Amino acid sequence: MAGSLLATPYPTASEWRKLVEEFSPEAIAHKLLLAHVPFVFKDEPLKFALFRKTIADAFGVESTNVFVVGSAMAGRSLKGTAINKEYSTDSDLDTLIISEHLFTSYVMKSLAWVKDITIPNFAVKPPKSPIIDSDKSKYIGWLASHAYKGIWRPDSLPPESEARQEFFEKFADVSLKTLGLQLSEDTVAKVNGRIARSFEDAVKDLSSNIARLRKEFRGEVVEPEVTPVAEETEVAQAAPQ
Image (tube, rainbow, N blue to C red):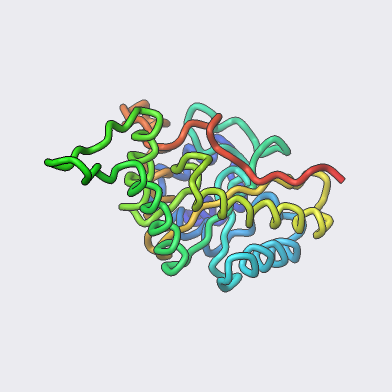
């Protein structure tokens, strides 16, 4: 049956190779976001509902606007070179919040940091712009690359920025509450997140990752990902109890 593979809850690596050829990235993205219990909660769907409510309460949104993405959603990495890598307790629980209000709020807070490092010195004539070193300019590039697509990521800002600190403080609290849900021992307590301006932007973002996966499977040249390097990604992690 043509639609049976799309209906497969957690495709294997070989099934993913077939899936991305048979269906459009948009169709797969809609399925993963709307008709899919994340792999991390596959045996505990009620706790998925509780997890969503915990995130929603922390950020003042509806629980229906909270999604799990990444390997915790699919059950494996969705990178072509790592498709055989299954989800494990070493993986993060990547969370997506869809909220135009939150997106706008965090982008504006991010721009406050950009202003601080880019504002010219008006005490001299003509005003002189500051020299921005590469350690700071890379964050401006990451922030802009994601924000123009309707996605805000805390790891696109430096650790000292107020917006990043505020976001991860909330997720640190969520991590502690996640342990309080008494999730099974193979459910991670590490929680990370991002914000999408709209559901359409979330679909486009996920679709682009799936389209990239298809190109990787085909051996086609893909552009380097514009994303913060893994070692600089901060994750809210609860201490073992």
